[in-house]
Amino acid sequence: MANKKKILILGVGAQGSTVAKFMDGEDTVSEIVCADNDEKAVNYLVDNLKKGSGKLVDANSTDSIVKAAEGVDLIVNALPAQFGFNVFDAAIAVKANYQDFTAPDVPGIDWVESIKKMYTKTGERFRAIDRTALIATGSAPGLINVAARDAMRYLDSCETIYMLVYEGVKAKRFLPFWWSVETAYTDMVDDAYCYENGEILVTEPFSRPVYEKFKHIDEEIKLIEHAHDEPVIMGINADEFFRGAKNIYFKYGGFGVEFAETLYKMGMLSREPVEVDGCKIVPLNLAIKLTPPAPKYREEIQEIIDEGLESDTGAMVIKAYGEKDGEKVLVETYVDAPGFVDSFEKSGLTAEMYLTGQGGALFTKMFADDRIDQKGLISSDMLTMEQVDYYLKHAAKLDITLDTEVRKI
Image 1 (cartoon, one colour):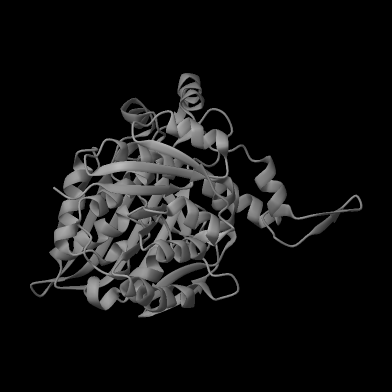
Image 2 (cartoon, rainbow, N blue to C red):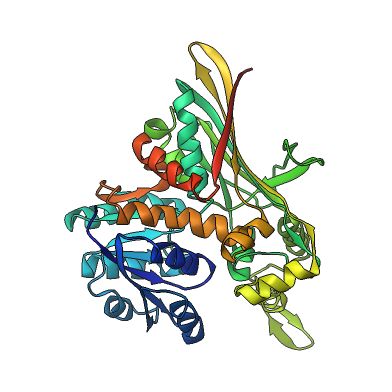
């Protein structure tokens, strides 16, 4: 059995708290330090853990993070992306492994270039202390990257990969997003990316729609360009990990996307101030302020279920086109997972929290079980096939499974 690990969960929102609760039941974990600047959220989480302890931390201060991280084996960063490099510095200072749900931002530097530097410069820093930084470990990115890697076992070469995500859960009350409102809106207005003809390209948000008929949903679904890590990190790693794929796309749809697109076209998601009755207002800040936050606590989620849902569905699908034994084939993989009500009955979580949090927790489990042996910085699409198998074996215990069909085209 692996030596017991002490873990710091930095940020105790939906994702961080889900990882903490999952790891609380793992024999390979000795202590879970829950850290945030929200004392109520920290105390609420610690009260629901057997191995939990709490600390207040200022994520703007690397020194504050270092104090919270003393003696830990792994830091799970569940904070917004802008704090990522502070946490990198803290992890290196205390010689801890690092896990992130996304690819952190470097202010003032092109995002694609910053990711490339992470693989090299930040990777070198972690290799120097014989530790691992693993980025992009939620559901998308994260679980979806693992599913895309799994699809490669059915191909000799790959031409094009589509990753399609549809958020179809809709409450009777107005709730456009089931995760951070700030993250949702900023992702909606940031540049989107695709990997096309072997190059990473910038695309317009909400542009280049595709229309997909998912096998379990009656109507055709519109999915659009959206700022996401997958085309960038998978594009960088296409030759080694994705059978030389030349085109990689992430497409996103759902009620929240449709709502945000309307605001975007109105200018309500602009970061540029506008004058209203003599006052300067940033439209994006106003939209964030007026949009109700995603439910976080069990009582809130129960109220939503008691009110009844208008829709409880969704889809995460990978379509990989390539060749096998000289013939053109499509590998189509559906990620099957509990819906909103099922997720709550299993764990007291929304479907979004369940899939993203549990998807992330499985990577944390791999650290705790000593299944991550690469050193430096890697992303979730860079797992070995043995690691993919381990991940999927334990995902199945959470009723998260892959339904893959390979057919000639």
